[in-house]
Length: 504
Image 1 (cartoon, rainbow, N blue to C red):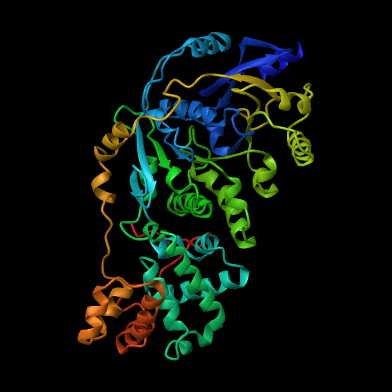
Image 2 (cartoon, rainbow, N blue to C red; image 1 turned 30 degrees about the vertical axis):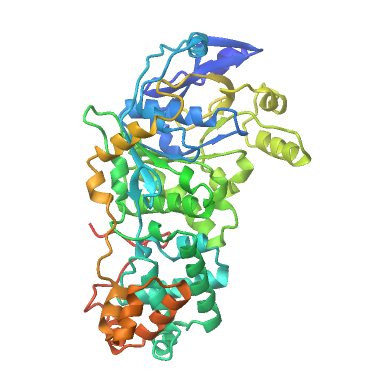
């Protein structure tokens, strides 16, 4: 058996699989040597990597289409704004027809069922929000860019609120609690669990104020998004493709990457164990993955590692999408059994170092991967996946198939119509500011006429913070804060990642 035949045999799966493309060998495309991913192995996670412009987004689209067709829901983060086309049939042209003929693909223009979301409603999609309580201290520390000491102090603040059953809906609720705990009345509350320094609390408060000043308060509140919506199938049995629109917030990478992790963590602690299923319950594509790991604390990285390790048994596959494998920590990379590596550049010493490191992450092969990886064309990739018995397949240089849906964005009018006709729009579109800790406090403190007039006028963050300081000293707050689990609810419990367990 020749080397090319041996590689092809490694991808000849007997069960359901996704078709990626055809083998490239000695510069020729071999259409009868199909490169595939076994469907049951997609919950063993994966990596799609490559330099900008090498075709990563089209690879995601190709995989997402076939997953949907097999009844598997998919989540896609649309960072550049060009993934919405998955909902519309593609357009044929000479390039598409030529690629289909090369790889023995029976190409048919097809659109797939999709829901469109937007963080905090900033964009066209259905708004995705989280409560502060649900988001938790570990993820919030990442968003606020707190150091380890400040993160631990924020955890202490959440612990206090949790044990009192005090739900934090939005940022002003959290500010009120922080201010109270550093006041003379509040300091005794934390005496037995470590205390909170005024300096650290001040840093946290300033971080919250700066965060709001950047227009980020809209991301936290109610109704909070139920991540089980991502597990839906369409009426025809195809998996729903959930597209989270991110172009409007792409200048806030800490925020959107951490929100993606919140979604994954929320799914993790809500889903039951399923073991090795015939197909995943969901495949989650984590785009711009390097943003998640940049400047991450040890607690944050440990939680990511453990979540990725354990969520497989709950039927969820996670694909990290980034430029090079070195963007992903080793403990996480070791868990990614399926690899699609597009071309890399080697223009600088750092590029060359990254190239050599990437080659070392692949199994031994007959290819000169250093040369191959710098010479791949757009829509070509080096592939190795897990076979049906869980063993790595041979490394295969692959010419990938063309997506059958539209390779580009749908127009804004069509997108808006799709969003407003969704059954989820009425549930999440309108923000709700129900009575919570902050409102209870402000209504408890009787206001003088001049204060009432001032209250109706717009306030700067510094003035608002001063008002909070006045209110949290009220007898109402002290009574409220000390009534463990009686006035507000039972103690809040948290998952591995520090996110609050959802009340079903």
